[in-house]
Image 1: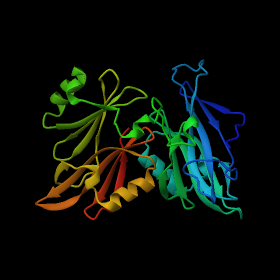
Image 2: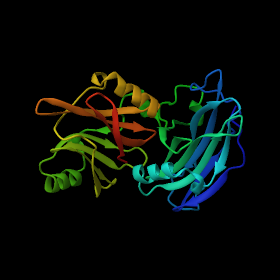
Image 3: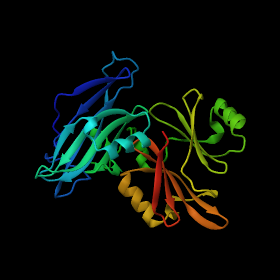
Image 4: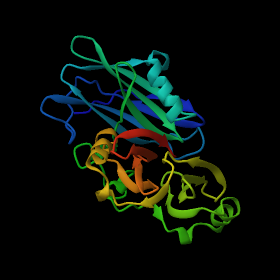
Length: 303
């Protein structure tokens, strides 16, 4: 079971963030659980309000399976290994630190670290090994879904049903967005568009001698443009089922319960150069690059 303790409330940018812990050595029933492991569940809450006077929160739980006898120990950001801090700065530029933990085994030896941050006002939990090397982005669930499939209709993670409810037709994008892209990136071919559930911002995928993600706020105002990590060459869309098996295996392991958005295969002079996969993991979008053999190369956070 999950034991609630008195919440620790920290104010960041006029928003309340509530963290609720359970110890790693507590048994927690979960569909990610096994007969020989327990689960750390950390509930991170966001407020939908824009003022610090609001106390409205919406909890999500961060799931981390761990061995029996393991314990979670709260640590300061400065106590994370340097490699872990470097990864956070490069992958989530401008992030806000929330909490961090050292995961100790039954002998008291640190075997892993978890960092919980906010990126674009959304919680992200990252697991590192004991040297600070990235392992994976941890799954999040709402409390009512801890023992189920990880999502429910109308919930924050309801896009896990594969219906891509955040997808928006390019033809119905606000005219301000279409006008901006036409004026500033006239050679772009628009591929796919998304409207984020939590802040109504837009992410537009396009190609023009490379792959790009262009981001606009809810009013259609330009925010930024990101060059996605694609090898040089001609990009073409590819179905998820057509991706190499080792690509799919890597994504399943590194981004539990991720939502597939789009994938591209890249050729140059008739030779396969690699693959790029766009996905949503716990309401954060990533572009993941693989080489021609399907081996991981690098990842870039989109929004």
